[in-house]
Length: 189
Image (cartoon, rainbow, N blue to C red):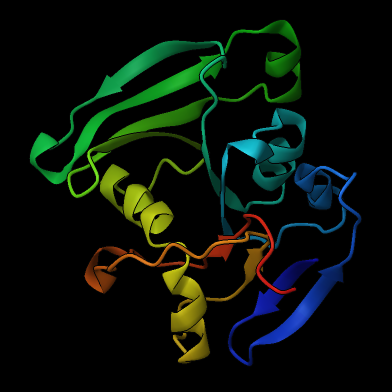
């Protein structure tokens, strides 16, 4: 089950039911992202044709990048490595099919979680939020569910499809502003 929640009332605005043979990324074909929404996804959703719809809809995404994604760095941005952010780059896709599907520049962020010592690499179409904010949004993605239930006004839609909800502490001051969404594997069963 895939659910798009409006956390202001914790009411589903979209419910999609698929069997186990349907890949999770296909749910992105079932709804149009709302302008200003911010969707956080794992690497299983790194389909550039579908992600480009977010950009065309004036919505934002942050997706864990796959190791085999071919990118060319265009610009390097200075980062504060004491925050865990290791690098920030403006990149373009270089594989022919990927570049045709997503012809615009992307932002690649590398972040080291000092607690778990895991390195995460994200691709996003958002060039406005600080790199640390994007990393914290991803790290704390399940906290949006509990924050939304508490009525946090800055959260608007959550799309969830994940079996586990890894809760980690969230620095609410670092969240940034805007509308946040979530796509992962199976929240409501």
